[in-house]
Structure formats: C-alpha cells, structure tokens
Image (cartoon, rainbow, N blue to C red; front, side, top):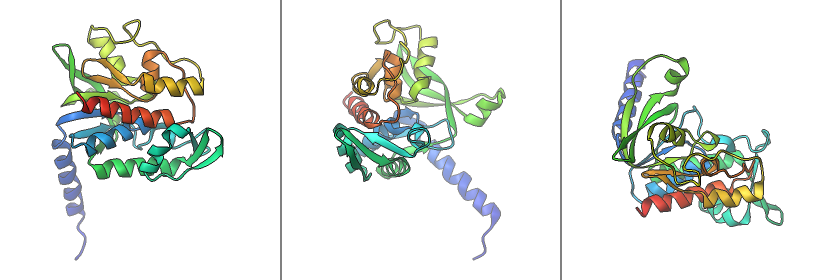
Length: 256
C-alpha cells in the first residue's frame, strides 16, 4: 500500500492528542526528565498511578547524557547498584565504593523501563505556573518550550494533579514559582529556597536523599532540586543519589 503524507500527519496528530487528553487529569505530574524524574515515574506508573512527565528540552535524561564533561561514563556508589540492576543497566567496579556505567545506556534503560511501566512523557513542554487551591498545589500550567523561548504571548493550558514532583535539577523551576506566587512558606529552615552550595560529592549524595520530601502541600522535590531547595551542595557526575531520590519520592507520593 502506498504511503500517504496526509495520513502520516493525521496519525501523528490524532495519537498525540489522544495521549495528551488522557493526561489532563493525573494522579502525579513530574516536572523534569532527568534520572530522578524518570525513576520516580517508573515506580509511580508501575504502582498504577496516572503519571506524566513534562520535560522542557527535546531530549530526556537531564545531565546524565554527558557523564562528566562529555565523557559519557557515570559513577554510582554501592547503595544504588540495586537500581542499576533493576533497570538493566550494566556496571562494573572501578575502585572500592566507585562503580561506573555508560551514561547513554543508563538514560536509555531508565526511559524505556519507565515508559513500559506506563509513564507518559511530554518533551518540549515547559511548566510556567502552577494551580493552587486552598494552599495546595493541585495542577500545572503548561506551554510549548519553543513558544516560551520565542517570547510570543500565547496563553497556556492546564493539567490537574493530586501531587507534583519538582525534578528540574539546579533550576528548581516549580519551587521557584510556588515560592514567588503562593505566599506561603516552604518546609525549609528559612521557609524559602536555600540555594545550591559548591561541590561536595559525598555530602551531596547523602543530602540528596535526605532532602527528598514534600516542601509545600502537594509539591515534592527530588534529585538536585532537593539539594538546591534545602541548601545542599552539588555532587557532579555521580548519580546514585539521584536514582535513590527518585525511588524515595515515588514511595512518599504513593503513600499519601
């Protein structure tokens, strides 16, 4: 049968609209498609929760793709090796306490496993605002990233969600919006975003997990966004804390 250009367009438009319309009312919305967001999405979708992930960029995976300074290898500590095994990511010991994995394989496996579990991913989609009702985050305001970048004044659309996870890394994009617009205090020592500190891999990896929590009713932080919110240091190209943080936030949201 001869391929038809219009039918190709019709198929893409129809299927995408079907997918997007099915995600207008969510149990959990994840903002940011790095390792913590992907791991969280996997566990939440596998638990049967309607979960979608919104990523500003064209690609999924956050900073993991480039490993360290574009050397596409990552380091993972022993505590997180069970997650590499669960996602089918091969790894090997480099020295005591330091295991390596190929960053391209890692991102590919995380994405594939999460989507097969039922996670819906929308790339090129930015979150410019949140929906707050009675002091609780209950939805997101979304816009195409190219529209945001162009500066065109185009009104956005909204999705509802019982829980929202900020996994946007250093930028803490959702936390920033809530802090600016909600008029309420975050669950940090100062009541506001503390800001990211300088690199300290060992401490940062531990604090990434400790700081993974609900910071405002309905809003959770995971991965580097957790450290940037609570004033923890950055960790560089070691990713065990990110993976463990994604699992922890998924369990916290599921237990609500």
